[in-house]
Image (cartoon, rainbow, N blue to C red; front, side, top):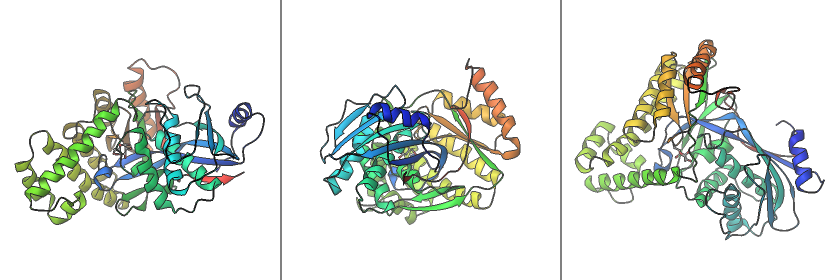
Length: 402
Ligand code: GLA
């Protein structure tokens, strides 16, 4: 882990009266390669952590207060008491992500000592690259480390996934798991209930390009309503299909899928789900099969095969799950026109980023085409580094004492 930069040192000294910090957490953002809107249905995903991340530096306090500042002036300093029952700031406030981690840990392990901290991040905000989960995980790791809380990695991932619902989104567990459990050079297949991460090395000649559509999708903002609506639709579809098949209420998506081939399941579901719910159900179960095929393609260094699965995934997210938008569709079309192996929206959708797979030998050419045909065509000028970059498969979050 690199040492904190001088900007962080100056920000900490200014905020907390000249003294220095003692601990640092680095928590990465992520790009999801396959399996979107499957995690909260208990079905697997294949994300990887990226080189862009969040750094949190801190020093233990003698009381139970958390005082946290941000080098980004859009996020003013926040402080709160670390207890098991913390009133949220108004909706959309960045401090709620810190409160989410604090409340969950205090409920189980309190009373806990707080800390003074400064955060700095180079993960584009509200771009579907998990900047918020990186913050929740960084705060959680810092609390755990400074208080010597005895909690295992899987337990912490699950606790923090649950904790993040504090901001009102009924998300799954992908972001928190990959943020903590990623291995450098690899993507990970993540299975749920119980949570397991299996690293899958990214073949040498593959490059995943991340391209931001320019449409922000704020998890704690307007996106939340549609996201939560999708989670409810998935639950409702599961309940109805399970009832029609004579299975109990307790059956899960993985349980349903292990019981019969996908084609038979879809045939049964089509008869009992009305027009709006059937496509949602079809996306979930077919996306789960694409995760398994994607894992096979990765292991076999089959770039064309993986690319085809990405294209099918995008179509399914767009047509069946209805979480794409014109900008994401256009961006995937430009990438495909530039000759990538495949491209899909990544994360929740409704804006955010596209991920495209290119052979390393072609990547510069593809980046130029995207720059010219998407960004410059839309009037973007100047440095595109925050919007268009090659993702490097990176390691998970960790804390160091300085
Ligand atoms: C968001 C959520 C994740 C997952 C994705 C969609 O990023 O935080 O848990 O549901 O959307 O795959």
